[in-house]
Every structure is written in structure tokens, then in C-alpha cells.
Length: 176
Image (tube, rainbow, N blue to C red; front, side):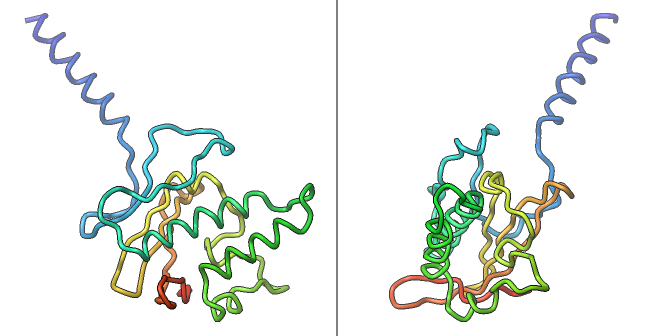
């Protein structure tokens, strides 16, 4: 009888330890396919590799969104660039011009009364977002980008509208 008690106790202990290792979030992905980057370990920000688009079937707009956020967050993380002068600002402008419509660039320009970055829907940029970014296709022109909010321990969403310009996709609008 004592052996059975120890056996059951050991099984319950192992089962409860296994449940503590699973990550729980308030994000519900049960109804749609979401493209994301999953990493097994936390690494220093200087060693975070560029985002690799998932191997499964991913549409071109999703690939473009993941590529844009990877480049944008990395460049913003370098700011301000005291050692490289104007190069950092110029590179950020090039990234925006390549992936965003002119209309959107004008819409999100910083003003004196607004110090928020609408591209990430936050005031601060976290390079660690690259470990948890998710993109969900809503329809052919609408996508949601999910960035993990470390303060509230949940995902926040950013609604994007994409458009095809010549032979590639661009982000045409951010819906506030």
C-alpha cells in the first residue's frame, strides 16, 4: 500500500512539473493559422538571429511583414547611433520607404504631442519581440501582428492593411 502511495505521489509530482514548463498566454490561435517564430532558449540581444520565415506554407505578404518587423526592430534597437552618425537614421528611412506606403509614412510621422511609435504600438522597442512575433492573416488585405507585452504578460495586436505595389507587397496602413 505504501509503495502504491509513493508511486502515485511520484507520478503526480512529475505531471505537475511538466505542466509548469508549458507557456500559457491569453492569445487564442485555435481558429486560424498564425506564422510565428518559436525559439527554444532566451539569448542575449546581440546574438538573436534574423527572423527566418517558417517552413510551412506562408503567403508573400506574411513573409514581407515578418521581414519588415525584423529589420525595423533591429534598427530601432540601435538608436540613437552616436558612433555612426546619420547612418542609422538614413537606414531607418530606407527600411520605411521599402516596406511602407508613402501615405502611411506621412500618417505615422512623429509630432510634438505624440512620442509613440505606431508601427509597434508602443513608446519603447524591445529586441526580444523578435523571439515572439506572430502574424495572422485576417483576409487578403488585412493582417494582425502580435507583439508580446512583457509588462502585462500577454500579446498586443497591431492591425495592418497590405497592398500589392508592382510585384511586391507593402504595408499600406495601420489601423489605430
